[in-house]
Length: 258
Image (cartoon, rainbow, N blue to C red; front, side):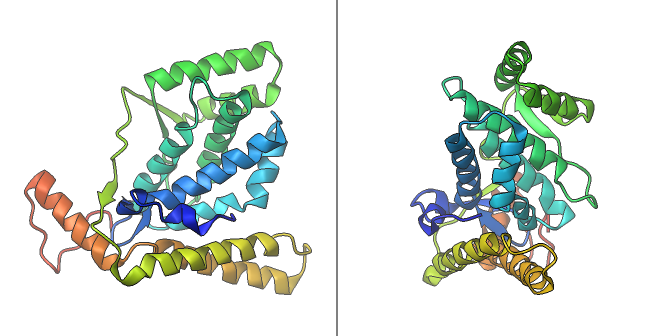
């Protein structure tokens, strides 16, 4: 994925953090990744899954799963990512974007790490109605890839229908960024994403390129998880539990979700 560092540091979003236990990631970082995915596909003016998958591979979008590699952090991360993808499914969105949402949900769901249970896609009823209408439209107009993808998700029980989605679920609010640490890490992350993208285009079977891809992936994971200062996340988590549940966590207590 190749993103503009500015997308990580919007004045309001930088205070919104996806709680991953002892670490976290800025909401705007995941939001920027999803936005890039959708806009890149939109520019192709295509409806087929092969075109979307080419964009997914070019952006190395599966690396987004490295944000949350602990079992207890997966639910918050996946639900937040699904929610950000679904936010692009608006009634006035062009057809490419609405189709892109279905493809993005499909690939996010089926690329989850095999060593963890799959996290279902929570969909509110109003969005579900729009999704099924798009499904019927694609059946009538013979956009077969959308029909196939939607059927596969239905068969796997990928959807969980809910009354509504809480945009603040699993989100912590931080007061600020100490010493510009996050800005430096975000800048480094953008550089790594560019390198990962370039490395992915190296020759298949090139051992040196494969080793570099592994190193870049490890660096991506480390930098993405460091986007939020750990101490600030712990402090925000303790304040959240004190406010919501009246529970004072001691310094030596394990944080929920860690």
